[in-house]
Image 1 (spheres, rainbow, N blue to C red):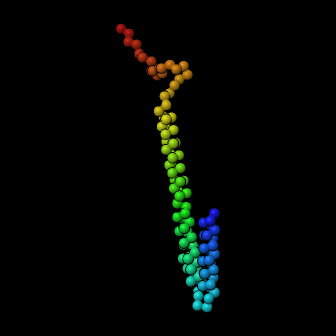
Image 2: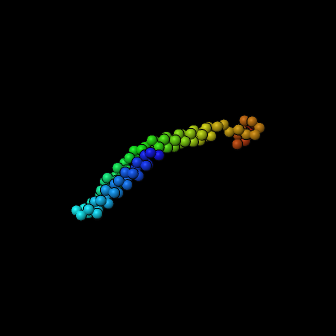
Image 3: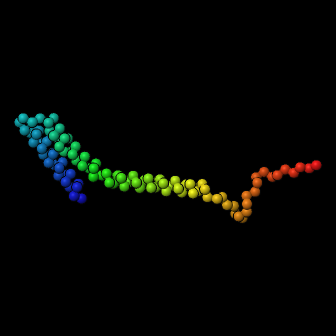
Length: 101
């Protein structure tokens, strides 16, 4: 909760700096835009990216764990023995051919 408040305050200060740059007699609007981007948006984006790293890492580890769990379940399903209703050994699908002499 503290970090977003600081970021909003920083953007407010950068906006006021840009406004002062734009309204000053020797300032320009282009200078105000660069002031806001370089002193406001740039640092806020960098801090937000750095502060979001633990959340992204946690999400990535959770996705990897889910993928491993799903792969293990699929492997167990493939390796599970096929049983029939009577628990008899499966019959040969082709009947043996008798030789008559």
